[in-house]
Image (tube, rainbow, N blue to C red):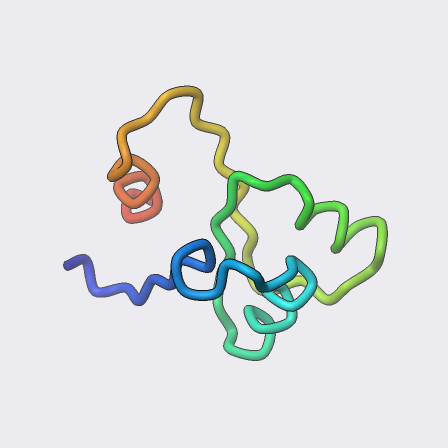
Length: 74
């Protein structure tokens, strides 16, 4: 509704490993929004190529729609 394309890896490609998600985001020029700190490890410790943006969300308690609302506000 806000004019952005969103893909949930958990729903559409649950068995995909984080390095593959990272490579796909770089190839497709997409951002990654995640609750998972592993992407920082992959980029900074393992030296994998980062996408243009990784948003690490740290929400304590939230309703299912809250992350989407936060992303649109960015």
